[in-house]
Image (cartoon, rainbow, N blue to C red; front, side):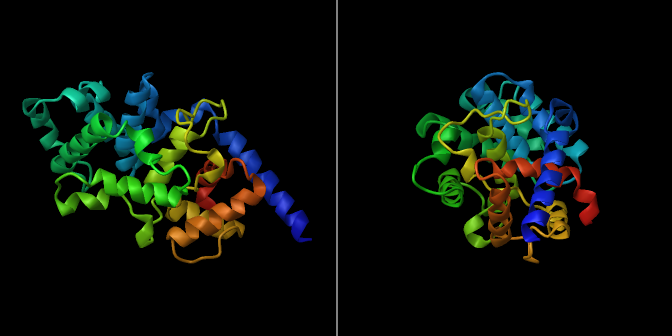
Length: 255
């Protein structure tokens, strides 16, 4: 009986994954911002900044992410590597919810350090090849905040070692690593395996997962991320996070 129910649930999730994992999904999703670019560095920088700003209403996320990139002359890689103090002055006026201009300037400075001294974002997330995704995020976070900064800015990059779901970082990694040829995720990074990714988890996807019976933990924390992803790996061990599309698409039934 359990096997039959499990198979039916997998078929349902597969159907929803196919429904939402297509280019029509892009227009109304924050992933549309990095899709404006072709250069690897521009894609990953704009994706990292956009994922960082991805809380609140999608229209506001897309609008403000696009505005920040436009303030970087629509050339994010060139901007972070060559911007002068004068070039950074307009950035100080940027605001998205609690992410302010000071935060934006620090993110630009830290990204500059990562590209100039640590081989770029992909290398920074892949410093320890044998480490899991959780450890990779924790190590990246340490590197990101290794230059002088205000403690205020640290809240904008989650720490799963303190129990956070790290939803926005996991979403960013999904964008960068998954490569299924459907045109939504980029598949630019080859140093991480799709099979090792963790499913982005927020209030809506958590409620939906509980409604479907694939998540029992009541709190949305890293343990819940692990439980959910472990279950999704039963459905597809090589690409468990593809079901993020399904949970996104049917999220209303769990609210």
